[in-house]
Image 1: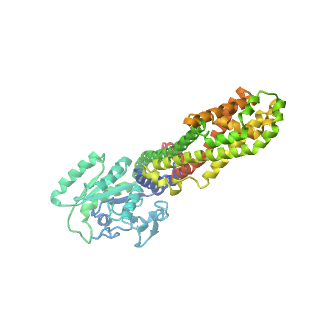
Image 2 (image 1 turned 90 degrees about the vertical axis):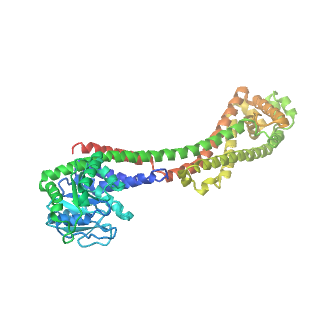
Amino acid sequence: MTDLALSLETLLEALPEIRFPLALPGAAEYADAAAALAGQVRDYLLPRAETLDAPLLAVVGGSTGAGKSTLVNSILRRNVTRPGVLRPTTKAPVLICHRDDADWFRSGRILPELTRGDGEVAHTRALQIVESTDLPAGLALLDAPDVDSIDDENRALARQLLLAADLWLFATSAARYADAVPWGFLREASARDLVLGIVVNRCPPASLGEVARDLARLLRQEGLGDAPLFAVPEGPLVDGMIPDPLVSPIRAWLGGIASEAEHRAQVVRQSLGGALRQLDVEIARLELGLAEQGDAAADLRAQAVGEFGHAGDRVATTVGDGSMLRSEIIAHWHDVVGTGSLFRGLDETVASLRARARRWVSAEPKAERMQEAVSDQLAKVIVDAAEVAVDATAQAWARTTWGRQVLADELRSLSPDFEARAVAAVRGWQQDVLALVTEQGKGKRLRARLLALGTNAIGATLMVVVFASTGGVTGAEAGIAGGTSLLAQRLLESVFGAGAVERLAQESRSLLDARVRTLFDEEASRFTGAVDEASVPGEVGERLTRAASRVAEARAGL
């Protein structure tokens, strides 16, 4: 297998992964383009690159009412396809080839998804093979469905067959030659530098020259001025065929292409080279579509991550602005530390502090009750912030079609276990605080004070200091909170020293922030995971780009 064929095989393996699942504008068109490109690589580029000297395939395509089947029969001087007045007439494609070329076309190397049959076939996804000595070896004619057929499947098949051709014999009529759909195909042929012959059929004799001149003008405008143009006047058929003198120039043109191996090779080089160059354009188009999909998915992820990031900020603000120092928590803390008489002796010796150890030991259950109150209140703050993030994300996603596509009903509310996980996160943070207190009290003198006062009580006091700012409370509550935070600060300073207290408070805040943001990241992952499931991984586009680069390198030797 040649380097070009190997590179095309790699590209063919990459193309089925190309999807455009998010309902962006143009996504359906990108998906159609990807399917068409995969079909062209499979049906034409790869088999042609594998066997450059295989027989040429000339597809006879064009618009409704152009008389393509009659034209094919007339060129061959044999009724091999069925013309008629009902539309569409060509429901299953018919391929006519010399008997020496029949094995190639029956092999399934070209158009492998179409089944083969020698007789008349009953469905459109089958290819009827007709052997004929009226065609020279090295060239086959394929009568394709109308490009503007009323039948969707026929239109798709017509496009597939035209993309698999080495050359086109494109038929239109005097009444339809300016129609938009056929010209879309002709512009594509121009972009591909495809070998092309144009037949304008069924021309009223009186206007034959005028129609031919106008069509020639249009062809020049589209860069197709060099394509041979055959004008066939309308008239009576002979045995169902156009009189031979009127179609013999078309037969001669086809015969001239097929007559010499060098002529056939030139057609292959021109059509294959043009298709490979156009491949760059098609790949770039798909890459653009994938980039749009990636950007849209990234926006959805960013909206979710951003809202849950804001939720973390809201919790951090609430923790730091004194809002947590409400009356219930303050009351619990005063139960823990007792009356103000305790603080009159904070500067006494360790021995005198130990003398009060029994009273502090009795305060340990009260400290646990305070921690429960903190846990309940802080968990509620976390849940409230998370609910705001969920609502904001859902509203942001609902503004776009693709956002609504990803926004499942279960994403409109928190995870069922979120509240329990919030409580667990707060409980874990409280254990972090106690661990900090224990670590800080490792020295002999500090350990004695810690033992005298109680780890839970000191931990509860450190939590008060963490919540020390009073910006979030007002009125009498603010005064009480301020006094409480000052007492808590003095108590901890008497145990650890002023510098250590500030460090402990900062570390405690950081540990809480980390736990809260981890919790929110987990909740945000429900949203980002939904985006991941509904979008295309970035490596898909990377594989496409690498495969296309290999094809570009290999075609340089064509």
